[in-house]
Length: 197
Image (cartoon, rainbow, N blue to C red; front, side):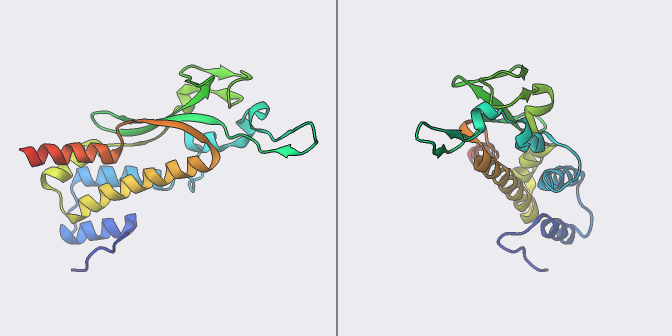
């Protein structure tokens, strides 16, 4: 049976899982892999997402983000919109939440045409949760209890996928802070619990 490469993609991990289990993939693996696949293609799928809305520069407040001319008539660099990110782990899911920063504070409510807000319109209902990895949390627990090499590879892939999307945000935004439990921190805690047991 061929081994996984050092940096496998999702298709390779899924094929390896099928080989390990003679084609019989557990439902918990399938749920997590499907959700990761959706997030993996977040920028390539045609449908609208909160992540895509956030990157839509037509909704950025031009008073904050546009280049300015100073007294000697030279352009100063435009400033990036300031945001805060939050890793939200629930009993079932992992979510990445985003909040605009106004006056050095994280804003939780709707903002429309607020001159201090980095966005022209900010709607928490449709923009706060950038994406969700359904069933990832029980899958991580399952992996540390009785997972195989493919399960661990899928958890690492989920982490790298989220990390890549955060890096993409860092290119366009000034991320003031990232709070909450990351996937890596959650895995360390689960590993510690199993080591102590």
